[in-house]
Length: 218
Image (cartoon, rainbow, N blue to C red):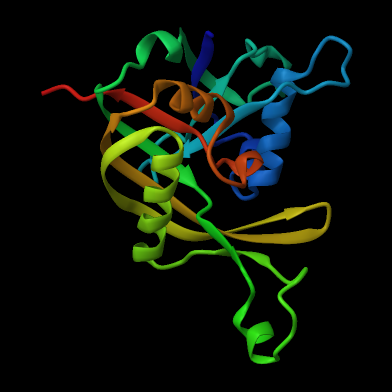
């Protein structure tokens, strides 16, 4: 299964780009224009991640999709340039292959909030998805996800962690956001292919869930 991988360099002088950089929901809306079907009603799924760059550097995005993007559909002046390549994770992954990876994700856990426990309320229907904020909790979350998606012997660090806020249709969304960089060994190529294609965790529309991997060169 071939996937398209794009590296986009954004035009910081463009007003729309500056708006989108301040709101992940608006960024997704802008990018979606490149993945609208010919009927103008279906938006094909894609994953994206803002790459961390120096303050004076050109803002850079990574995009992955099963459908070829039509970047000409974006507003004129929004993009400076882009690079494109295709790859097949099914052909690239094999058991025992050592890889380096990067993942920006929304680490969460589903449990009954402490305030409801203290009030003695029934747990039925009271479980909520809660963000994980400490580095220790985030790394434990990563280990659980890695086992689920077919990665073993995971060594990773939280290279960036913050509180993402954006507005969606007048409502404010707040979520935990962490970037993980590390290395691992492929244990289950099939599970890993599915994770790469579909993304990991929640918040995928807001620039989370894209798992990037490359063979570890020694």
